[in-house]
Amino acid sequence: MSHLSILSAAGLPQAALSGGTRSVTSPIDGSEIACLAETGIAAMPDIIARAQAAFRDWRTVPAPRRGELVRLLGEELRRAKAELGAVVTLEVGKITSEGLGEVQEMIDICDFATGLSRQLYGLTIASERPGHRMAETWHPIGPVGIISAFNFPVAVWSWNAALALVCGNPIIWKPSEKSPLTAMAAHRCLERAIARFGDAPDGLSQLVIGGPEIGAALVDSPDVPVLSATGSTGMGRIVGPKVLARWGRPILELGGNNAMIVAPSADLDMAVRAIVFSAVGTAGQRCTSLRRLIVHKGIRETLVEKLKAAYSSLPVGDPRESGTLVGPLVDTDARAAMLAQLERARSEGGVVHGGVAVTEGVPAGGAYVTPALVEMPGQTDTVRTETFAPILYVMEYETLEEAIAMHNDVPQGLSSCIFTLDLREAETFLSASGSDCGIANVNIGPSGAEIGGAFGGEKETGGGRESGSDAWKGYMRRQTSTINYSAHLPLAQGVKFDI
Ligand code: NAD
Image (cartoon, rainbow, N blue to C red; front, top):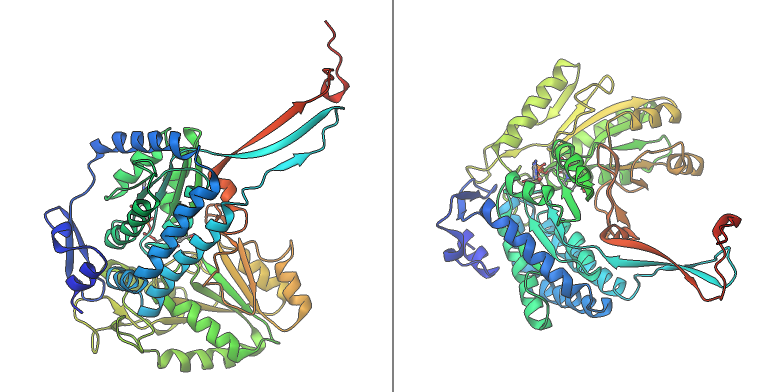
């Protein structure tokens, strides 16, 4: 299928994709696939005002009815799964099964949020005063701004959108400038769901196209009480304080530097499969990609040999072809950054296996590389930095205490795991003195989370939580109420104030 027919099948005819100034290219072959009109900065106040107007209606729609809209979105996504997945592959270079997996994740969160719409539970709290009852209630909070990264061009939006909508909030989405087409195709699915729903307010969901300056209009507006931003730590460092300075609520999902500890008792064959998937899947461009391997000294050599063998046969190439496991990096800048980082690792004593540009047997114009395995003498500054590419640093340890200390000694705190068959080691890793990450796994890799759990991480990963568990509370305002059904007015803490 040609690039144009992939886009057209996803509801994006050529006419909608040309005539603007924002060039969009495919990482598969570097070709331009659209030149989009951007949202003007001057239009942002009206867009935000429309969302505020929509909020006044949507917040009064009963939550289970709001859930019906998200159920319809899930239906639309089921219908459009193949077409939307193909746009993910075309625009960000994910292999076909990962493109489809991304859409499946959207469907899953819609199912979750539909059920959630009947479970936005509050609390009844025992009051210390006779004839009083206390309650905690959750209310819609207002328009939610969603700024997303290129590497999960639609799934991260759906985590936010599905929850925000059932929680009673309009949404304004600014996707990555590298993946606006996937966003447009996904937003059409929501527009179809809204049309079938019938009476949703205008402006309930809006999509804006542009770069950081358009995102900044959402970041700076006091009329956008919740701002969810996914991307690099550098972006979060700017966005987080700006949202807080205007008393907004940031939900930050930033960079990771995820590690696996491999203990002497580990099932090495299972570990190898988990390592390869999480280090080279999505060409190392997941926030949860495995970047650091901390291996017990006694098994390091054996494990490195197995990994070298596995890495040597990895099919790198066109992500649309079945059999390809490693597609392109998002662009040539990403490849240059990867190669520069490998040079730095070498200068710090690293021994690099792989990590070279691939030009044979791949579409011309794309940024293809072989994944790199780098044996490091220790956890240097380069290892402590997130490089958004398939680089896996290998280091060794002698005691679990030392391994956990090395594991936690990075600025980021997203995802982590241990491979061990020793219960004491596994539980120690999950304990208060174990991994300091938002996600900690045993005998599975750090990437590929399910939507049922709260997703996010600590330290420079930003502290936000999205998706499952009680992450929905981040999209609502909490109200504590005390109801006096007695004929007296006692004060709390025994305070007397008789007049
Ligand atoms: P990026 O930071 O370059 O861009 C992310 C988004 O932020 C884009 O939409 C961009 O336009 C916007 N943006 C950038 N500066 C801004 C500003 N000053 N004001 C408002 N908006 C601004 O990130 P990227 O290259 O698209 O994505 C890769 C990064 O995202 C990696 O660091 C990865 O770990 C991280 N990521 C984190 C998660 C997570 O859940 N923790 C998920 C996906 C990606």
